[in-house]
Length: 603
Image 1: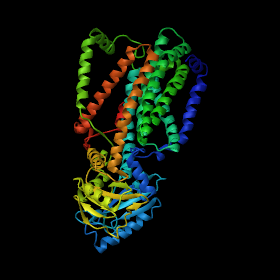
Image 2 (image 1 turned 90 degrees about the vertical axis):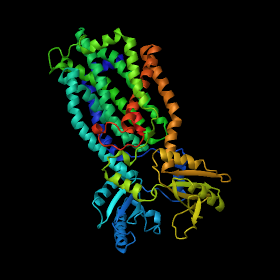
Image 3 (image 1 turned 45 degrees about the vertical axis):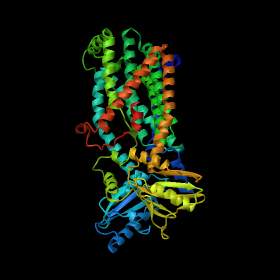
Image 4 (image 1 turned 135 degrees about the vertical axis):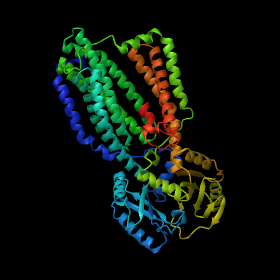
């Protein structure tokens, strides 16, 4: 730290301008990261469901559609005029160079399951090139078909459509939040820091860390899939850490100046004291966020990449750019004060009174605080974590409308079925397994190479005109149509029930599809969570011990952090699972779960 302190005081201009230049240069690449960020990333690549997805692609040449279009003619889908419109719609979709494959009610032998209950709407399944920005294609299709096509209504659903709308909503909301929050935050910073110049320093630290972090996100996108949620993490943490670190450093600098140190001496002492605190704080946060890389899902790994990047850049900004700026500014950091004495270190005032009151009655305050936080923790009793689907969007969103049509007007979730692969199964074993599968109350129909099944019985022989591929290599494929929310508790329970079906005599049974992907993802998180928590606890204890030299303080810090985390989860559970405070937060949809990624943001 001594060498760093000397560097920022003897070469202040070189350090500050060089740092700013590097960050500015990085924006050339960092800005490209936005187009490479992806939605999804919830799948566990080591799971059975991931194997099913891979085998369907490599052995059966079948890929799940990225987009699901529903076209509603307002009359029978079998009417010749409807067929003409459908043909024109098919031709238009095929004109998109990003569309690799297109299936529909008409190309699949007019299967009844691909037509709505009232017979007026049908499915189109769209596979997109996985090397392009699929969300942009979804947006283009929404814009073109949102007002209809040749008199028919067109709706787009699927996770790519959700991602497209989510990206647009995040961009709009971030712009609105920044428009509102930044002026308010600047005013608050002026009051907190006491002067206009000092109030700009945390914004400098935050801006440099945010801008620079996207360069490392761009690097990550070159080697691995990276989630769109990483952008949210960078923005929120960059500003938060910038304010936190700048407040520590500036206050220490002012204290040293008041104590009689010249500007350079004050900066050096600031780096050696407050700078050391900032360093250990940042290292702790980075190690905690880095633990997200232990999880197999790339949306959590992305949080690790983005989190470590923004913490690292925040540290670099606070330890290099900020001290150099203070050394150049000197006492001009206190210019444009709000009132006399605003920048003076004070031991009197409301915060001093609160601190003294707490120290005078520590046991009483501790008990009240623990009880208050404990009551919030209790609100989270039975909390369940899930993953985002269309219900994260506002109720009036066009993708929500499309998804609700699937829920309400079609017999089952044809676009997202249960996919079962049986290895080494005979025809008779396929029939018996299909009967057991169709006996589940949530399974509407089952299709196999040996026939169609419902309610535990075979209802029809195999259709020789069914284009579905049911066998490849050693595997037999079974398609089961269900009526549950794949990305929710009902999807998890369905998967568990199906995996409990007796499979004696069959070499291997693999269950995939949306519900199984969700189940395996949640269980993958549960399986790795103890390792992550152990890593966080041990690394935090070690770092805080090295910083404080105390055995008690690190333990206290960990316990209080878990208590505050539990209280936050409890409050979120009360709001978003209980459906409270909608008058304040808007008419959000209650799904019965909290998004797993929110854990990362609050931890």
